[in-house]
View 1 (spheres, rainbow, N blue to C red):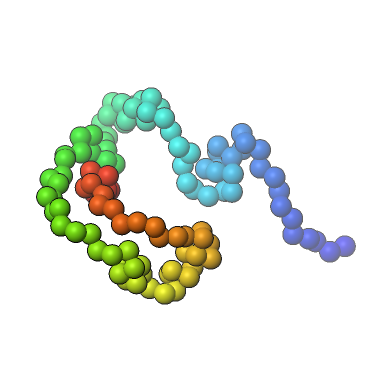
View 2: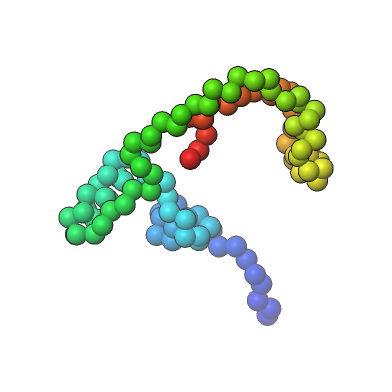
Length: 108
């Protein structure tokens, strides 16, 4: 009798102990209460707790660049052809306008 390869289903309760439904080591997302409880326990044990993101993000200064925005076609031409083709194939991307984005909306 030959042995075959199969997929063994993992119950949700088993997934919590393995780190994920697919056996990866990615932690499950937590809410603020759980995270704060974990950090408080770590402090009680004497561990140094360093937040992943600073609690208060300082405001960045907004540049007062009010000059004209570049033409849409010029910006699209800056994107490599392979990338534009892949975006079109995967997402049906259509570039429609050029806008100025406030610095506070960008990740640090």
